[in-house]
Each structure stands twice: as structure tokens, then as C-alpha cells.
Image (tube, rainbow, N blue to C red; front, side, top):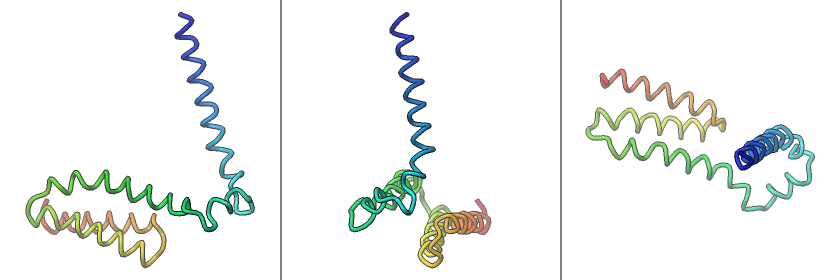
Length: 114
């Protein structure tokens, strides 16, 4: 009984700390913050965000791509990935690039009849 109550309060405190940090960190790491400047200026940590996004994308996309067979299955994936990459490079906005990639992917799915 006491162990389960302790587990409960540890979970509540952990959630409170995580909630606080998600609310407070944007203010602590504002553009005027010296902490943020130390993390981004000349630091290898500056590449951490893009590296995490690339790693997550690879982990999500690769199993589906490895299971594909035939041009009609590969074309939508390849077209969507290419459109996303080109849009991200050209526009510099990851959100818009993802939307463009999804639209191209859906369009190619319609074209190949899947």
C-alpha cells in the first residue's frame, strides 16, 4: 500500500516538473538568453534538432520503404520524399515542406491507382 502511494506521488511530481519545464524553457531560452547563445554559437549541439528530425524520419519511413515492391508502390514514396526535400531546401520551412510532400504523395497515389 505504501509503495503504491509512493509510486503515485513520484509520478505526480515527475509530471509536474516536466509540465513546468515545457512551459518555462521557451522563456529561459529566449533569443536574449545567454544559455541559448552558448548552446547555438559554435556548438555541435546546434545540429541536434535537425539530426533528431532526420533520425525520427528515417526510423518511421525506412520500414515501409523496405517492404515496397514494384514501381506503383515506390513512386508515391519517392515522389513525396523528393518533394519534401526540395521544398524544405527551397522554402526553408519544414512545415510547408511536409504539407507539399503529403500533397505530392497523395497525388501520386491517385495517379498510380492505389
